[in-house]
Image 1 (cartoon, rainbow, N blue to C red):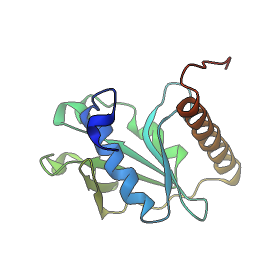
Image 2: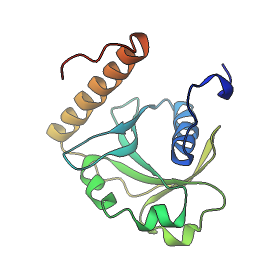
Image 3: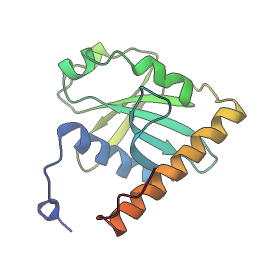
Image 4: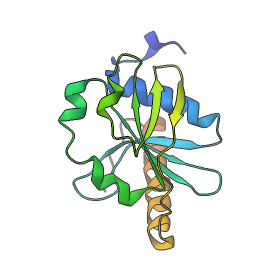
Length: 152
């Protein structure tokens, strides 16, 4: 399947998320996009590692996109590691030094810097793994049966 087979054009942030997800798969992480860890928050990419690690990646396509994001610090409580994903033209000096950094395009990515490891409490990890599983299952069902809206 080529990019031309998609029925819609992907936005710049979605293209970054795709490259990030492809790269993380190479590290044995699986990922979902646009997951809601708590009311009022929606992360671009949540990745689940082979040992239950929870990473959140926020994709920023421009300086304005980054500067308008006032919620990102709220994501830190919902992951073991936090990363920004940006393209090669992004002014990375804007990003906090104590966060992870991924340089990405629509096809792949490279982890440039790991943010600090802040392990989730077991109860919060359980919640996040359940949210991840439910989100992935709903997405899989929607792909198999796009006309079904169901009751949620």
